[in-house]
Image (cartoon, rainbow, N blue to C red; front, side, top):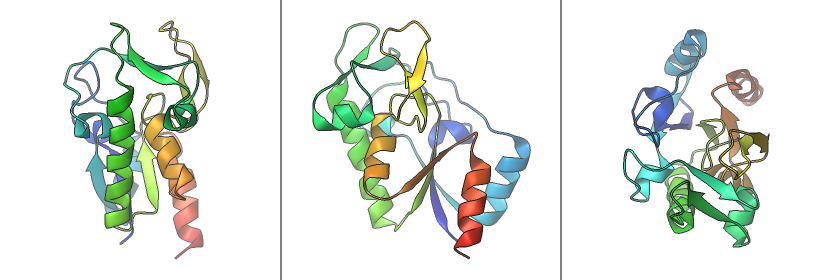
Length: 162
């Protein structure tokens, strides 16, 4: 069975900044449970960030820019958490490499895990096209990244390779 990394908050663990979790559609959840081996992981918690914690956004860039050192991740309290976000991305990559994971389902919108949309860094609730730090790191290394809204894409990908 194919191993797939999945954001811990998507399986009901209350690890988000506000100690909540996210969900996905019941049919998608049922399909995942019966077709893949889920490897549950939260990059932010893995790097030592607390629950709850201040909401964070990427300032003046996207996930790739954070990895390149040209953008930062700040909490709305002004605390620079760039180092923790980069460490979390590295932790996710190391886990994927150690377990030969080629696919990830990450929480959309997150400054770590967003796979197509992230917040714009103004803490205004405005989203922009872009990837979070962990999503960028994994994609850069050839791991295919999906969100809780694009499980059909993962299904198609796995069907092509089975």
